[in-house]
Image (cartoon, rainbow over all chains, first blue to last red; front, side, top):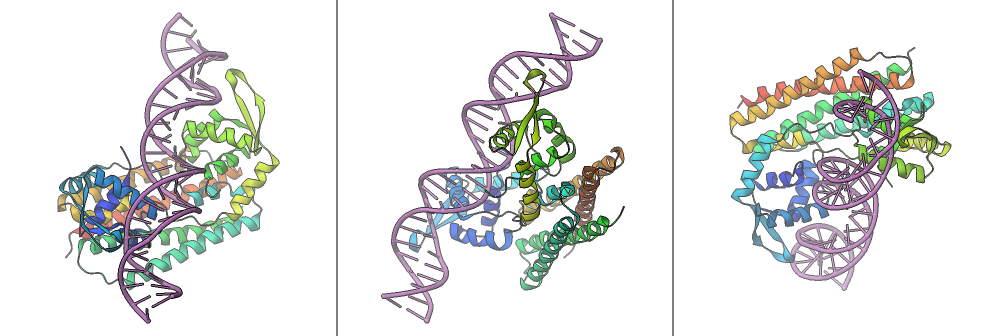
Length: 175
Length: 175
DNA sequence: GAGGTCATGTAAATGGTTACATGATTAC
DNA sequence: GTAATCATGTAACCATTTACATGACCTC
């Protein structure tokens, strides 16, 4: 029973107001895309499970078979419990760094190309996040406040990757 | 057929010298643990598949049914191909940041506790990596050279998380 | 001979991705 | 009426985790 954070992401989004699977899909594409990507099929299946476990209920139905889900008390409790109790997860897989590990197999030009690509990637990410940061109109809701905190994390992360990549490219030309 | 980086991690480790599943397990526990954790069962199953695909072969057998695998030409080619071609992966899931997103659900003390925990976690990680950095005797092999690059990434990453967490805790007491 | 380490494998369950499949409603 | 969007669901496959299962060899 450990992990399963898609559940908690869905519960978290339902805290403010009820929403349909479709709504939640859009919310994932927007705010949560960089933190917890989820596919359409995954969201619908998980919602069914959450409803079966009575952490959410269908609060309203609409056109086209639309079902709006709302958080139950048990759902809110589960979310709070997870927020407080969840322990630091194991280190997460990092495909880019894995490549770095084996750079020795390539010849020098290819090596530099790989690192350059990582540098560009970091720059693109940073630019995208700076754009989001100015494009969103931040209100004073909780999601705004803590979403901004998460975004700041992303900004610092991409800056770190950029700086590292610059350093690493530079290292290549050394002894 | 996209992703599958465990394959490439194994191929990468076999570049330098042949090794058994057991050896590879130890190598994962050591150097690669922070970049690409893998379990025993996963390693053995993947080795069997890699052998079936003729990217590696059993080069030698030893006591206790030990099988030493060596990279084939096809295996080396596949590794190089992956190193050069692999495109930037989708953003990876981040359980900690997901928690940040929903901090609003908690009361102030719990909120601070969550961020403090993240701060401590970052500090511990940083200390552990600094320790590794001095404990390993770095030779001038490729794995040493690029392993050090990867470690530098880790050092910067944990510093970034530490600084962010300090900033975030500070933010809590503001308007 | 007892305990530790070396060594391999399989099975069940979970979580995630991709693809398929369908259809109602709205806006033009 | 046509296209876009809203809306839901299922199936097959792949990757990963946890647990089970076994046994040979080495050191004391």
